[in-house]
Image 1 (cartoon, protein in one colour):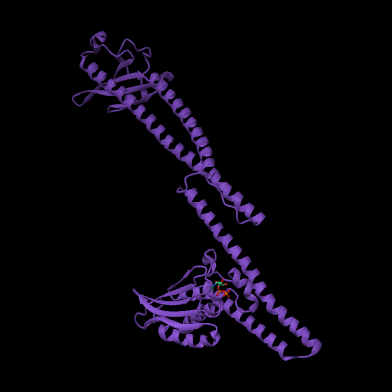
Image 2 (tube, rainbow, N blue to C red):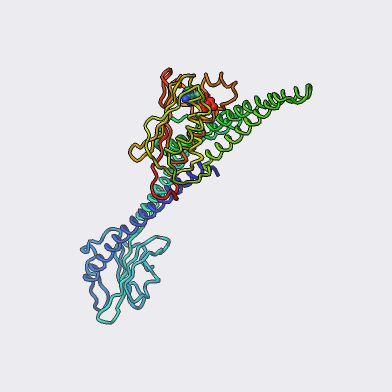
Length: 460
Ligand code: ADP
């Protein structure tokens, strides 16, 4: 059964149940009120009749007209011998008892009776003098008016019940359709996405965004957005990896062809070796990124002297810079952080390596280490070409390379993974990495890490 049908059924049954209870309560209350009023009238009349009854040699009710009986109350006085002793003038049932079965009762009782198929309410009162019962007084009144009232009330209630049930059903059916129609849109769009493989679609919603459906649709749209991003980055990633693999493979193949034709020579072997190294580096970087993005980068956390690490890397990188650039220290302080020294070294190598790579000959590279508040700050500044403002938001994405770096990639060095790896390593150390750069004015990368506290055993 559809949700709409179930909601309609639930709503209608609820309304139906409430109306049924209400109807039964009204019907019962009206019946009880009318019946108790009739019973009161019968009891009062019985008292007046008894007080006006004279019992001597025979029965005599003194002056019926003076009693001023209610027009529809009939009175019979029966003797213990079962003979009718007296009766009110309006009784046309004369010889038959109003409630024959109750005549033998030794106590007062009031109940419905049907003499000659006429519906009566009959009060039977045994008349006693001292302990001795000397006769039975029966008073009855027609219930035809009550029956008519009850019948009409029942008809009104049943018609009202059916009408209300129909209106509730239709209203529930229509309102649930209106409320649930956005869900149909969700289904439609979800199906269209599946069929057309188009994750750029979003579900339109005109209603208030904070209601349940609005929240659902907004969550669904957010999920679609995230999926779309993932999908795109997945595609881009495949294309980038394919692209990066193709160049070294083509070079290797070319060299192998050459060697087949003219025999192995040193140049071809060196070419193959360097491309294999490049491929090995690419695969290593990709593996590291995959681990980092999955939150599973293995870190050997220890106390690391950041200043010593900077000096170490600087000395190693001097070989790379040769006479092209000057490498020197800026602000320099003793700083301790908790981290994996190999990974942090990798961050420094990537940042300094970029500085060396992108800064033209004669430039300068300045390394700094210091404390700012409870953070360690490590800076690598160059006076190279700078990073265009439009590139800056993307440089930490994997495989992203600036325009100049792309045209220069023939030198076979960069994959566009260096900053991405640095970003993830720093992030796994509970820190962040900033870039401050302007075209023509050089670039400063700042790595912020939490200062070491305690023995570095607990993860950051
Ligand atoms: P790549 O392998 O291309 O160096 P990275 O992830 O290390 O990849 O860097 C991404 C891009 O950021 C580079 O292609 C380059 O455009 C830019 N970039 C990084 N460092 C510098 C720098 N010091 N000076 C200028 N541009 C830089």
